[in-house]
Length: 186
Image (tube, rainbow, N blue to C red; front, side, top):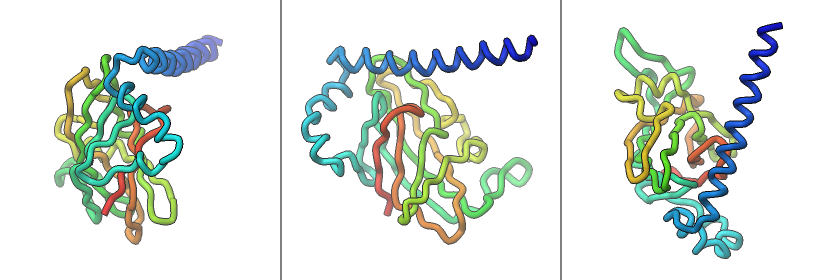
């Protein structure tokens, strides 16, 4: 009986947090004071007409919500991450995506590497490997890292994909519930 009640309370709390974070984003978006909102607002009509305008390339800044992402590099074909004693072997191959994440909002925002996605040419979606990312990042920059306004972090997001697959784009998110922004690879 206690387990059921505890689980129900935890589930209700998580749902409330999810709803609360969405309403916070909406409230800050409607204020018009946020740089990200201002630039998004300027492109409001263009965004509906030109979906490709939301795509960036390696080295170009791309914004989603309160974050500005700049993908620095992408390296695939890595078989193992970490040291001989502590590390992780890829099921297929690791693709290491080095990126800079800057908070352009007015409040702290949590960056979570596991919210990021990668795609192959055929549209197959790959999730980030948070366990491998721990070995790829010395200071856990991509694992649930709170970034204050104006601050930025550099880190590596890791994807474990089949050996014969090549990634063509990333979909980067400021939260699990955001629309995301595309960055083409290659």
